[in-house]
Amino acid sequence: MGEESERTSLPVFERTRLVDKVTKHLRELIISREIPPGSQLLQLDLAKTLGVSRTPLREAFRILERDGLVRISNGNRTVEVVRWTPEELRDLYEVREVVDGLAARLVARQGLDAELDSNLKDVLAQMEEAVTKRDHTMQVEAHAAFHALIAEHCGNGRVSALLPLIRMTSSSLHHAVELGFTDKDGAEKVRRRYLDAGQDHHRAVYEALRTGDERKAEEVARRHIRATLRTDLIERATPEN
Image (cartoon, rainbow, N blue to C red; front, side, top):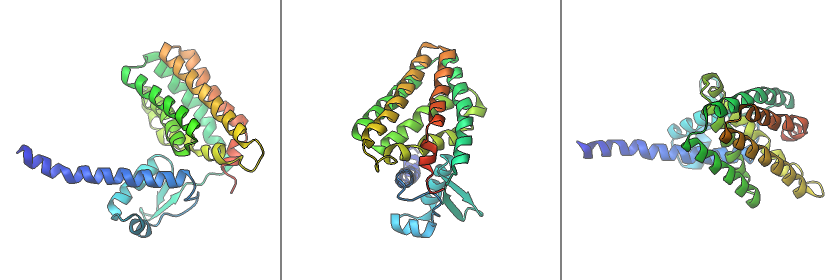
């Protein structure tokens, strides 16, 4: 009985691993803009290129849709990489200011459990490492994970329902930070200034959560988003619009 259960569960496990690999590969291509905003993802062509069937590809599309990176329409036949105008992205960040502040306040109120504390420290360390290594993909994933962890564990279901918004907007500007200044002298200094300032905010949010300071947690979380709104990063992230 036990051996039979193990045999029947193996294909599901292998399919899950394949979906994860396909999702990770497509996410990297989208974040790096090797697949640019507005591009249509054709299932037959991608399945042939990646050497997979359309089943794991469709599951990967669903995960990317949840993350806010693609839109699926036309009865699942059309999959398009999300393209935002500067005005739309700015509107979303204004919503983020409220949502992130509320999530941080609620997490500080209930306190960090050991698992969440460990996970937040891990992604903070990953962001530090990514800046040092200039690993764009690692930075994007760790940054999105930091904000998503707080929203996911705040205890408010309405906030948790906004995780796709948080993930998508958290990754939307990193192309501008990483690549948007390369045509100017001192590009590396500009890039590091933005990333270092953001990391200072992240550490301040974490400390407020760790100490249970509700007011400080909300204040710093909102300040982090306002700092983005005061820059031209949104316009630099959406130059084609």
